[in-house]
Image 1 (cartoon, rainbow, N blue to C red):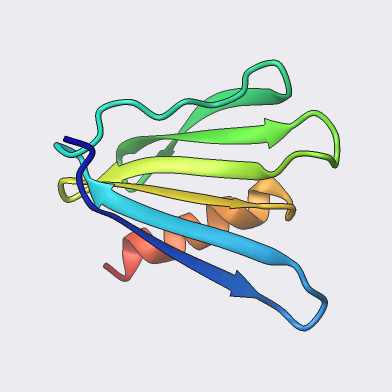
Image 2 (spheres, rainbow, N blue to C red; image 1 turned 135 degrees about the horizontal axis):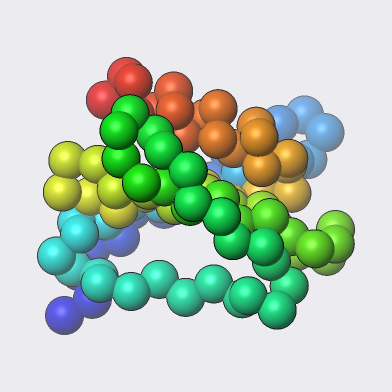
Length: 95
């Protein structure tokens, strides 16, 4: 069972996109990340482990993945990973 995934895409006036997805943790147990073209680090959002995925060049998107309240969330885009972290923290604080 892959579970249900909700995908939302946001685009600003300059054409920059951020993709936001979430799913029940029990629905998907693994998320694959290209580790040849990304640097993966762990950090903490509201006492929970999260992962930042930083692209090694501008051909790839940056991302943040975290779990909260039985869901897995991820954000992806060609915006700085620090900005994605701020968005993730804002989502987590305003659940």
